[in-house]
Image (cartoon, rainbow, N blue to C red; front, side, top):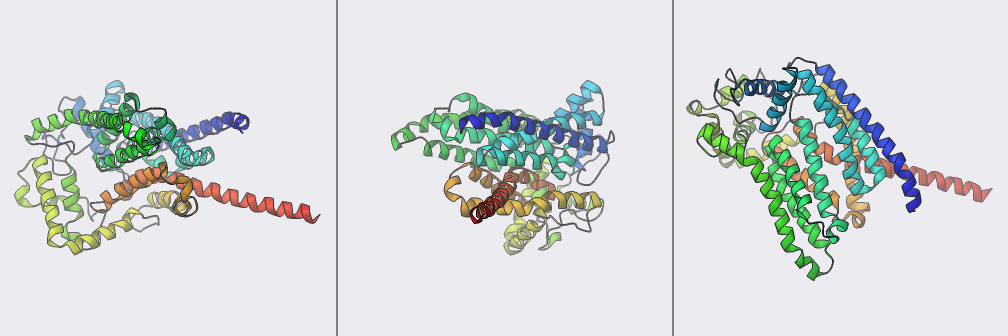
Amino acid sequence: MPGSDARMRPTRARWLGLIACASVALRVGAALYLGNDVTVKPGTADQLSYHLLALRVLGGHGFSFETGWWPATAAGEPTAHWSYLYVLFLAGIYAAVGSTPLVARIIQAIAVGMLQPLLTYAIARRMFGSRVGLISAAIVAGYAYFIYYAGALMTESFFIVALLWSLHVAMRLGSAEESRAGAEGPKLWLTLGLALATTVLLRQAILVCIPVILLWVGWRRVATGGDSALGRARIAPLLRGMGLTVLVVAVSILPWTIRNYRAFHQLVLLNTNAGFAFYWGNHPIHGVNFVPILPGDGSLYGRLLPDDLRALNEAQMDRELLRRGLGFVVQDPGRYALLSVSRVREYVKFWPSSDSDRLSNVARVISFGLCLPFMLTGMALVVREQWSRFAGGEIWLVLSVALVYSLAHVLTWTLVRYRLPVDAILLPLAALTMVHLFDQRASRARAVRDNVLVAG
């Protein structure tokens, strides 16, 4: 009933506010734990690179390192391996308050602590309703991996927020109500462009998902447009809206493409990491069993680089490594297939392992390990029991993005932390399962009570 729903809204808002506050508190705690020193803790080696790059930018040296650096960047030479946007975020904070990583950690923790549960609630509510939305927000707030990385000076947390923002805007564009109301005006398409641009500038791997998102929005807008004539009438504004979104993404990338051309004298769209990742991830040293982190202090990766490439700059080397990595595939496609299959095991790892420290093992088990059965059950509920209710809906956008993003890593190089964005967008399925189980139990309890009353 509308009246009862309106009375429930303040209660939901209070619960959501409490969840957001708890989320912030937990993430600020993680930031304090990581402290003001930028030391290498499990899964956070990249934060040292971002910290040093930010200092170099502030010092007027541009995107470069003072000494030779990962992956194969010579001292003082330009690099495009790292997210420009995140480096600028850190540099801005350091410019304002000095080189104090703890301040950057706390600012980041507060921002993602608020935004992760709120955006998750908004997405889950669109898919499955407010109850599932609240539980989804609560799960995200207490998810151990998200808490830990919220304090790390890396792209993970902001990337997850930007991806959730992108999906939420896409869902708004694809909703039946807004489609019939003609909500294809430029404002929402522009917002989608800004959200996707932010996501891409944090991690370029998401580029493979942009066509999926736009195709889903386009299909939904045509499918919910009413009769066929109305659907055809929506094609022109739909294409204009998509064009605006793509234009915003392209404009956000263009300055860095120009910078890269000036630095390396060749075309580099955004970052120079795809070639390195594909070469190392598919090198014959793995055989048919992928090793996510090769043994040693990381120097083995440098020794795997061909000697005849060492005189090249970073961009030239990245391109040549991609070519040679693809050569590994052509030379032995069977090994590549088996190697890719072996990466699935690392990608979905939820159990403790001897090569991880205690903190990593605990975080893995109490987050993904606990939620995975509920996620899988939620998928089964959607596909088998509630197909007619959710057919064509927002859940298929989420599942499509999760599949494409996962395949991009399974076919190249993967680590557990590369899966975290997929965790974030699939957690509403875990919440759906919890609500379903609660409703089943409540239904059985009512049936037992009714039988007792009838018998009495």
